Amino acid sequence: MGFRLPRVLNAKQLIRRSFLNANQVPKGCVAVYVGDESNMKRFVIPLSYLNQPSFQEFLNQSEEEVGFDHPMGALTIPCREDAFLDLISCLNASC
Image (cartoon, rainbow, N blue to C red; front, side):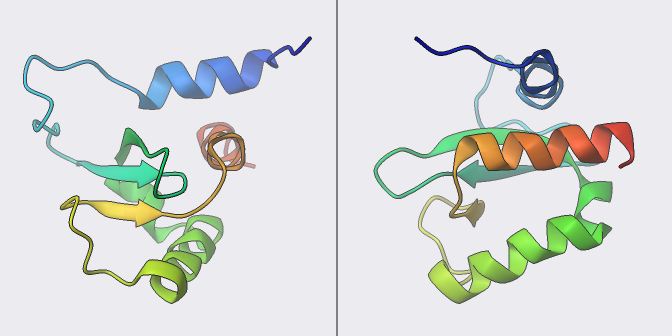
């Protein structure tokens, strides 16, 4: 039996958004795909996160593992979803 921590749920609600058109990304945000090739999830995050050192570590790992030329047309970060949500929770709380 599993359970989720409230901060993970809040982070998921903050960064996952529903749009009429799945290709739309609000101004000041960027779409990222998180997970392995068989199970990618799309998140929309603020552009300001890209300047954070902890987020840049994820970007460096992404560049090493999959490069920046990805067929999905968005930034791809090859990590576990829960690790990504923890990072986003920390950025939201300004850890």
